[in-house]
Length: 119
Image 1: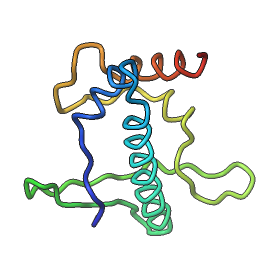
Image 2: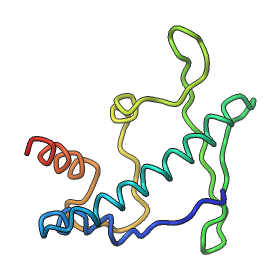
Image 3: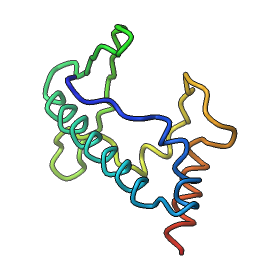
């Protein structure tokens, strides 16, 4: 896809870095995630008007990966769109193909974000 990679080790260390006072490092990483997500989202939206939308890329290890976005129609305009966060969160959790620190899953991340927002 021509997008830059990211440092996965910082993702798993984010809660501890935040607790240790490295908020700017964590926020910079989150900003990078948001920019990358916006780029992927933009490319996915551009593919929605294809008869069989999908996105493919080559990993750093040379493997071809692909993603077929779940398309829904906007209720008012009937135009195709990606699912909202709430719609995605109501779906079953995917099987994670890599090892994460114990407790570091989607539910943990959501609980951590919610607790930080309450502070």
